[in-house]
Image 1 (cartoon, rainbow, N blue to C red):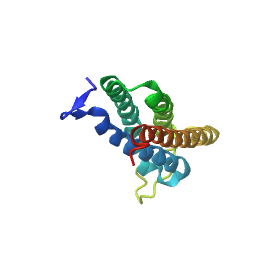
Image 2: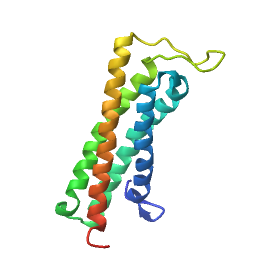
Image 3: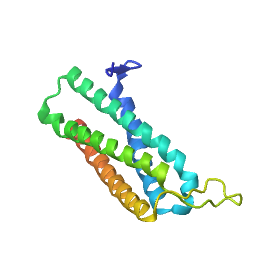
Length: 161
């Protein structure tokens, strides 16, 4: 199921979606946490992207496993990348849950004259705690994306160029 897309390894296609979506969602989550006056605008894009992120990450990991099996790549070559990708999936799952919860319970004013989109949200200490957690996990996800991509790039290109 995760082997090919249009005659090419699926991992080649979905990795680009993951490399765009994961960092964009993490940066959006940081902005949502820090810029309370913009939450009215960032809320639903964050929730939708946070739901999509684990799906894309899961497909990418499965496609990577299928590619590894199809090519018969040894664990010595691809093991670091594979283990970091699996860890990224776990981080993204935690991140997605926090981002969706934050999107649904954190309040904020609206910059619109009508006040549309403003929310009261839960108690302020809970919002601050959730915001700090979301920023921390967002940074963790960003670092893990870089580490995973670096290991994959080295596995493919080291010694080639």
